[in-house]
Amino acid sequence: MTGKLVIGNWKMNGRLAANLALIDALRADAAVQAAQVAVAPPFAYLGQAAALLAGSNIALAAQDVSAFDKDGAYTGEVSAAMLADVGCRYVLIGHSERRQYFAEDHALLARKLQAAVAAGLIPVYCVGETLAEREADAYKAVIAEQLAVLGALAGRDYVVAYEPVWAIGTGKVASVEQIDDVHQYIRATLLQCHGASDSIRVLYGGSVKADNADAIFSLQSVGGALVGGASLDVESFGRICQAAKKTV
Image 1: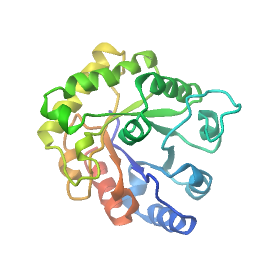
Image 2: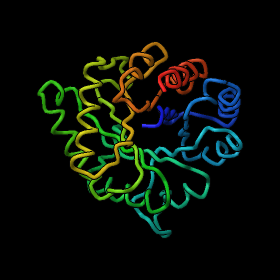
Image 3: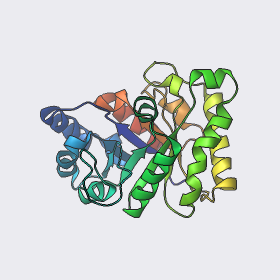
């Protein structure tokens, strides 16, 4: 791994004025500028964010992408080509909230992954288990099934984000031992079963905050973080980026 990657997922948050203030503050933060960083605003604000990020080292990411890879009569959909056209480098695929609220299954996610790489985007593919799956000691089997769709991307550039569903937005954080265990398992599975490069990055995405970032980033198996709520606060996000840079 060549460094820790920090992606701020704004989820369904943002307004024109608030976005302007947030991105201006991020650009002025030395810790953010020194790290490998991307932000993922809602679709409606990607154009604004792209303009505001121009000339900075902060990359643009999208929160989702259509499974349809050609332009056409797909009302409400946003294609991978459109995301690339407005300047996106990354796209989140398979976030637990998409799986939970929109019933996205492996077949659909496989199509989204293929559409993303065909357009030159780097997919950030999210995997993770529920509390029931963790308590049943079935989490590795669940994650292996989720990872299986990546087999078709052998030789392509992608990122994986591990997000234990039970730790998202709950304030709970997996222990460093739990995080390391799953990240090592994911990396081993990708290398042995899916032809991934040894440089594959696996991000952690379960309630990452300024006060736990140092411990999370100290793990060699962790290639960065997918940050939710804390990415909307400049001070917190800056401290997370600073922690990421310290461990390089």
